[in-house]
Image (cartoon, rainbow over all chains, first blue to last red; front, side, top):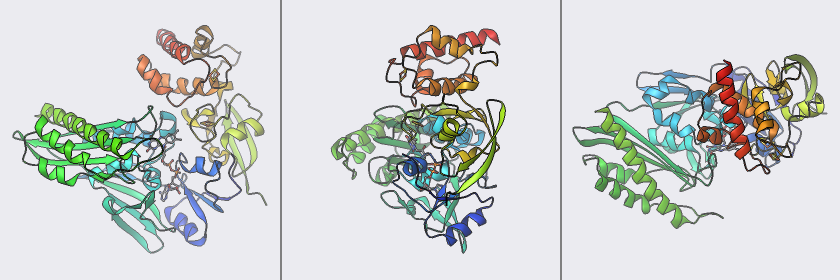
Length: 288
Length: 161
Ligand SMILES: Cc1cc2nc3c(=O)[nH]c(=O)nc-3n(C[C@@H](O)[C@H](O)[C@H](O)COP(=O)(O)OP(=O)(O)OC[C@H]3O[C@@H](n4cnc5c(N)ncnc54)[C@H](O)[C@@H]3O)c2cc1C
Ligand code: FES
Ligand code: FES
């Protein structure tokens, strides 16, 4: 239960980190360590080199970009929860983070680490899918951008090269009279979700004008309920509309594992979609 | 050859130095390098909470942080919670009074975690306390004594300040 020997590097710029990643064959970057350290301790991962991002300047922090929230990859989950820009422009992020591990793990865990680890049930990827966030990567040939929809390639496999670094995330926030709902079902508080649902609704003149629904934990990566979203636009935000969306969720592809069957996940998804939408609608109505 | 670094940090108010192998966790360094065996290593993968210490005042898992990463930082372990003359903190006193421990394995993590939690949440509900220790596993007490102790300590601390 101790890591195998490795060579440790602690660069102070992102460029230096990318050079180290380019130079070494078998290197792993260390962010908050809340997923990587357990894997090192258990020797599931045995890298020759560990590149620690914790001393790098300029890749942590939260900024209002006008119509987006610009978040550095090394921003701690705890700092997202304490941030005023997030609390006012995208409060669902702070709310959902209550479900990410425990306050002790959130003190170290970062947004970038969660997005790169890409656990199917992780809350932050589910939210980035909800917002169609844009990720910025830095590699040897400079920066490139990846929309979140193209980020997951397969089970826990993000679209990032071995010599690339995730440096930031851009979250376009919703204007207007928008409400949000985040609901999750897990065995115990702080466990990964069995299913989690995040929803955003904008309501204007008694009608839904914009909707997004993202489901985590159901499949190998977060899924957007695009059909149901389209059907909600133009409808009144009422129980009948939310029931229809729930029925749509019941039809999604879900995975089975040692604990939970695929059919159970579908039932959960349906129930949680309805709850998330009702929560979003009641906030949007309050705002009127 | 082992990859090592010299580090300098503050532990419970005292300046300490050491040469660590870079793969050594902060928890193992505290226990084996500095002989501060109050910090307990349980699962070593972040789940049990026994190893929790304060780094610059914030509660973190010492099994998930490398000792080398604590260079230049301020660490508080369970040994640093009482006054210099040995007087227990209000929280420690409440643990004693409410039977907040039996075997004591989880206790260092409970005390460090709850110290940080109560500093930020001086008037928590029972639910808040239970959520705060959701990442600290106790196999003895059934948690009731721990929760009672935390709520009682919060009350004492509110009166005191
Ligand atoms: C007890 C416990 C409970 C948890 N419960 C939950 C939960 O309910 N929900 C949840 O979502 N998470 C949970 N987690 C995991 C969460 O805490 C981690 O923060 C997160 O998964 C990884 O973030 P990190 O910053 O710690 O990254 P690390 O562990 O440092 O890294 C994770 C992976 O991402 C790579 N990586 C990190 N940053 C970058 C970057 N900038 N560029 C390229 N690659 C990078 C690393 O190489 C590594 O492969 C839990 C963890 C623990 C210990
Ligand atoms: S030993 Fe660190 S959380 Fe269990
Ligand atoms: S007192 Fe024994 S584990 Fe908590």
